[in-house]
Each structure stands twice: as C-alpha cells, then as structure tokens.
Length: 183
Image (tube, rainbow, N blue to C red; front, top):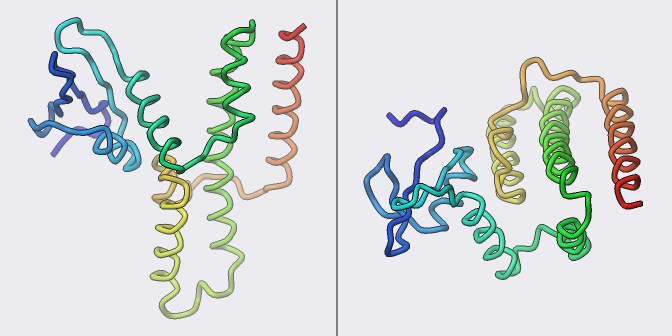
C-alpha cells in the first residue's frame, strides 16, 4: 500500500517521459491530473538536475484543460493573473488565491453538511444512494477539488451567517491591501 501522506514522486527522464516511482511505470499528464483529482499530492522532479518541475507541469495541465474548452478560469481572472506578474502585488496574490480556494472548499463542505441536516428526505429509503450519486456529480462538475468530497468534517461549524460575515470581512481586508499595493 502506497503512503498517501507523502507526495507521489514523479521523475522526468531526459527523454521527457514521466516515471511514477510508486508503481514503476510511465505516466501521462492526464494520469497526473487523475492522481490530483483523487486527492493525491504530487511532486515532479528532473532526474538529472533534481529541479522541482511540479509547478511547470501543473500549469501545463491547467493550460491543456482550458484549451480543450473545459474553462474554469474566466478571461478577467487570467488577465488579472498576468497583470499581477508586473505589479508589486505578486507577493500578495499567492496567499490571496490560496485563502480564496480554502474558503471555497470550506463553504462547499458546509453546504453539503447543511443540506444533509435540513433535508427531510434523509429518512427516505434509498436516500444514501441518491446522496452518493449527487456527491459524485458535484465532484465531477468541480473537477474533484481535493479531498473535501469524502464527506463533511465532523467538527465543522454549522452557523453559516457568522461564517459568511467573517469571509466578507476577510475579503474586504484583502481587497484593501491589494488596492494599497497598486498605488
């Protein structure tokens, strides 16, 4: 059994082929995307130089999905990302994006949890099968988005209005910081 706590190590050979060190076979970019959708962290390194190529390959996976019409990133977001490379905001953008995705994952988990608690259909026979299908559908529509679809966190707070206010306050604070950096 592979240790899923450690990142899956993929080695790139001089021939540009990608080698999965756990299964001792060659993999494609789509295979790597599948590992990530399944919640696995990956690390891609150049065999000869030891350079970490993970970012380069993840960007390539995103670019391939976007070019096939599987658009997730609106043009305005892509434009802002390009713009951020030419401003002083580059130091803030990674933290902002990471925090935004974390809030998104948390809100998705809370939405599923609240839906499960408030729904009178939960007592209906066959509801669990229907719920599993719904979660599979959501996972497919969002591209997996990590491990949060395995079920809601047991200790997740259920009070949504306070959480929403806190998220709004954090977003406003981040926007203030970004606007100050642009000046």
